[in-house]
Image 1 (cartoon, rainbow, N blue to C red):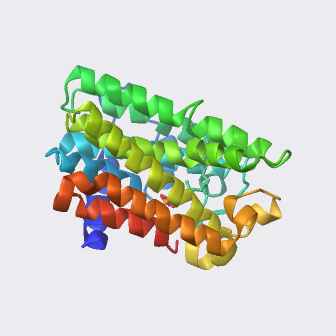
Image 2: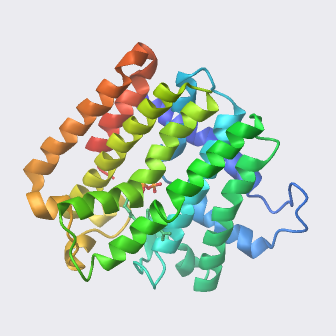
Length: 298
Ligand code: GRG
């Protein structure tokens, strides 16, 4: 059931992304440069599990808001996630040739195109949420924009990426690794879950509960990623593996080993399930999502 819903939600977010990333100018734009649009589409519509959109839509559904607004926020978040991958793959960062099993944007186009495609995806995410077509109250849209900016920016993803680059020179301690990961990958996943609560007009307590669930599965996501980096082969995960060790990067896996990491993952899944327990059966798919993230193989 989880896999089927993940695929259905992925298909609807991809249909919306295909429409909103077409060459046709929208919302009063003067024009859309076709090569820029092609590079943006390559960065977004090139596979991907669409896990963050699933989390937005499923969290919103928990509060009865399974609607176009949730889909548009989900698409906006996927634009930001995809931008981070496009920029992360650049020669100045990870210098990767392969992403989601396909040539990275700077390989298929060029570096300038990849930088601009990433910049445009980042900005476009906010355009999508702010638009009147995202049928939410103005206050909800502002809260979503503020929370997404926080998650993607200095105290979130880009700040975490900066710490990650520094960590190649000065190895952080355990607290430093956890903080870095909560910012770099955890913040967007936490936002995905909190966004559903904002869209569904949840009360403060439920919003916090969803955000905490997001933090638990966000940490699990990164632990699973670190584990895959040491245990999986590149053809299976669709990107280079073994990179953390090659870069001398400290991860919780390198500090504590594989068995400890697997135990931590099990504990995080349990914590995520407990946070969702007040929602009963309605949260079954979100509970499955925690398992999927912790046990994923790509
Ligand atoms: C360059 C601004 C900037 C930020 C980069 C998140 C990030 C920060 C870089 C991504 C590098 C990376 C591989 C991190 C590990 C975790 C991660 C985000 C994996 C990819 O996410 P998935 O598995 O990918 O959800 P798909 O392709 O399924 O969307």
